[in-house]
Length: 98
Image (tube, rainbow, N blue to C red; front, side):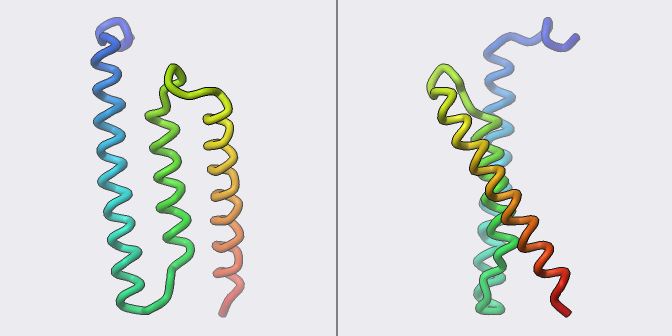
């Protein structure tokens, strides 16, 4: 059991490092969004939604219930659900196009 060998500060550090990694991933996705727009002059909605999903997932992963209320977590969950449905609709629409 790994939990008995790690302290709370180590767990917090790991979560913070993972949050930083996700920040880098979000920055790379934003760079890809901007590059795609500058090349094609078209906003790739699917890529924007995926970037948003990563950002909200990061927020949920580093979420601290001692700082925020349960309502904040519910709001983030609703945001994830809305983005997931949006992604599914965009993906489905793209598959129907010739």
